[in-house]
Amino acid sequence: MINKNAGILSIILGLVFILFPMFSSGLVSMIVGLSLLFFGISAAVMGWNMKRDFDTFSIATIIIGIIAIIFGFLFIFYIDALSFLIGIQFYIVGFIMIIFGITGILSKSEHISNFSSILVLIMGIIAIALAAFALNEPIYIAIIIGIVLIIEGVTLILSD
Image 1: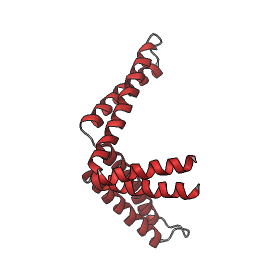
Image 2: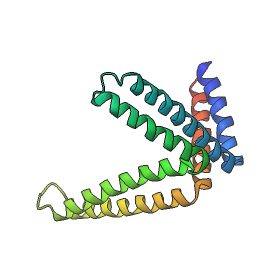
Image 3: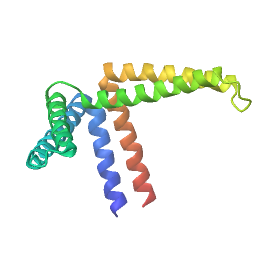
């Protein structure tokens, strides 16, 4: 029964993401921003309350709190969190794949083929292109997330 309810909720959220991608993207940014804002305030207050010790942990907690507050406001008022976070993930994966591809090509090991290294390098370049695309077109990312939510919802309903 729990899987069925979660599946129905997932399908509904998927449809909302597909039918209203800008609203969905903005809603995700607001939720991430508010979460970071409240976390940042909590961390800064906790660090400030520990200031009598004024050790590295309390200073780091205050700094992390301030950074979280800044990012919270950025996500609420400026940055589209969905495309930003997905874009960052693609960039990280892309750069790692490019480094692995280049080191595989330069490696003289018998266990690493040049063909697979070149494929990894090409996939890394494609991942970076997808990152740029995700940052520029958050609507498509919202639609893709909607499709994934619907697939997950159907899977949950059928598994019950």
